[in-house]
Amino acid sequence: MDAESLSETCRCHAVGLSRRAQAPQDFVLPQLRAVPRQGGLLLLLQVPHELLHTGNGFLQLRYQAWDFAPPYGGSQFIDSPGTDCYHSYLCEEVVPYVDARYRTLPARDHQAIAGKSSGGLGATVTSMLRPDLFGAFTKEEDLNLLEILGVSACFSPGHDGSPTLPFDPRTGALRENEWQRWLAWDPVRMATTHADALRSQRGIWIDAGTRDEWFLDLGALAFRDALTELGVADDIVHFELFEGGHHAVEYRMPPALAWLAYRIADRP
Image 1 (cartoon, helix red, strand yellow):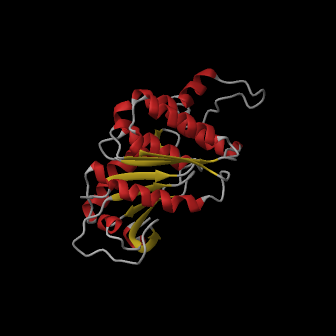
Image 2 (cartoon, one colour):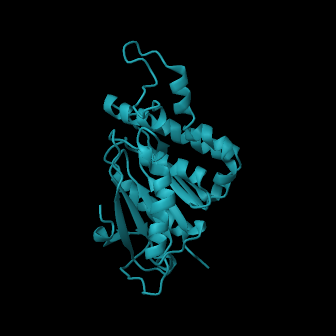
Image 3 (cartoon, one colour):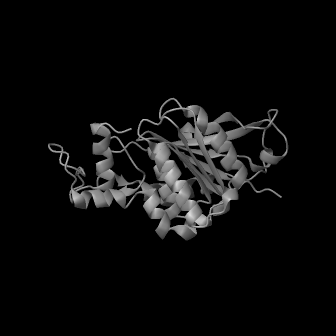
């Protein structure tokens, strides 16, 4: 995919702001990177930081799109022989590409990563693994057999990269080794060994629907509790359980992006 040919301008309404504005040409911009649910495109959103505290109305966003569709139809945005090196691709190729071509604030304090569902996992894990790149993230909280196959290619691939299920599909019995490989990517468990990275963040947005079909509201609660136990400051965490399920909640992304943009802005 030719990333430069997909560069566009769009507007995203920022909560609490009142009228439309355009960034002057000499602005440098902090970065929001939005990773999607399983597969799809990675969107990199550039947010004019000064618009966030001047009372102007619409954020002017430039975005770039990259193809992030993995072989088995679902990426968790980690490096895996089953789905390729998506984590390294994002951190080592996409981030430098954008910083080299656009008016950005490349310091990690002005870089954020956001995602929903599998993208939320990718945003959380990436922030813990690379706190030198990202200073804020969102964790917004469906698996049928095909999706489990795709996630297995990420978390428990065989030596040849083929997915290995964490359970026996005939009996449902857990395969302990494979299951432990899945648990190693659980953000709640990862938090303990990445406490410094989490405490260094400028903003962490966590939300989930109270009727989430896969009970990800419980996972959101557990992750919030883990942050508290690790001493992550309350004023950098936005935690919210909203009325809704796992699907048709795209309306949750604009306020999350606006909040993240404010957290990473170069404010006085």
